[in-house]
Image (cartoon, rainbow, N blue to C red; front, side, top):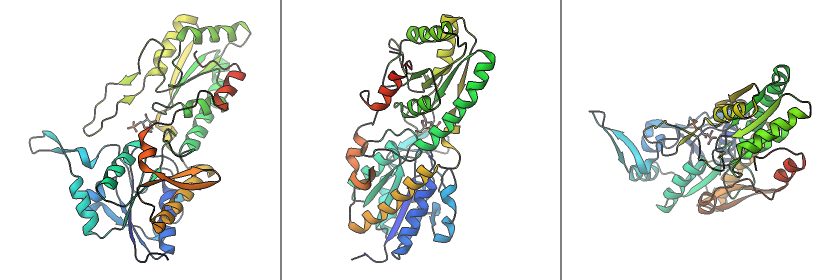
Amino acid sequence: MTPHNLRIVISTGGGDAPGLNAVIRAVVLAADKRGWEVFGSRNGYQGLLDTNHLVRLEPSEVFGIEQMGGTILGTTNKGNPFEFPVSSLTGEVTIRDLSPRVMENFKRLRFDAFIAVGGDGSLNIARRFAELGMPVIGIPKTIDNDLSGTVITFGLDTACVTATEALDKLKTTARSHERIFVVELMGRYAGWIALESGLAGGADVILIPEIPYDIRIVAEKILDIDVHGRKHAIVVVAEGAVPIDGKLTTKNETEAGRQEVVLGGIAERIAKELKDLTGKDTRHLVLGHLQRGGSPTRFDRLLGTRFGAAAIRFIEQGYFDTMVALDPPTVKAVPLVDAVSRMKNVPLDGDTIQTARDLSICLGD
Ligand code: F6P
């Protein structure tokens, strides 16, 4: 029997990913069909910390949003309520645990379930609230596709389409100028975006975090291409790629309330090294946040829509403390703890890596 008059609160947290609005729309419409109410917490957990940032989401407000990038609720990769940066009047920042305030607001507003749409960071926070007794359903989102438990996350497909289009455009200018282009793509510690876009976009070299690279092998590949008559080449590098004898390339940026390091700078480094080793004209490009923007592809809209509707079904069935996951041909509920306890990397024995090797694409090893 369908439970009546449920009140659901939903938030989107972490880096935005194309498909988030499709999730929100599906949650609102599937809840409305059951006569339930949906509220949105703005900017991750902000609406649960301060209820002025809660908004009622009516079906009329989500009309047409499935085609929009970003998230109508806003998002942040700061603002973890368990370690919240609070500034004093003198500007001094202290870290406080504001989770009791979130639990109190959740109960006071008589919410029945919380839908957390996020990557590993936001879903880990959601899991901690589940441990405190909050009925939670997680929905995996990230362009990085690094969450376990689901075959794929929405956002990856759109990011790869953008990256592939960028590679297509670079190939023509690379050819005209007989240059080497080194293109840095996102993905944090997983190489999904770089591998899939690099293969689709005809890259000669693809460097991913899962395979530490030797720059001399990359230089040899470039020189080999040159000897065989092609004077230009495309090198795709994931932001989290590491040299065999080195470490991650990071930016020295710190932001209050943000725990993770900011990756970036690897393409510039590789471009310099390749210029020295090959003597060829070399340029680098960081595609950056373009990969998170734009209208979601059909795939990401559909997956986001399926995830949103499934979350409402799982609430109806009482499957809490779980994450919605794609397990083709179906969408199932997996324990939230399993989904966030380990990262999903590119399998080195998988078909996509094998395909790259079959095409003599250099993976740096
Ligand atoms: O997790 C998504 C992601 O885009 C990563 O690929 C990237 O390393 C990071 O977020 C960038 O974060 P920010 O938007 O804070 O610069």
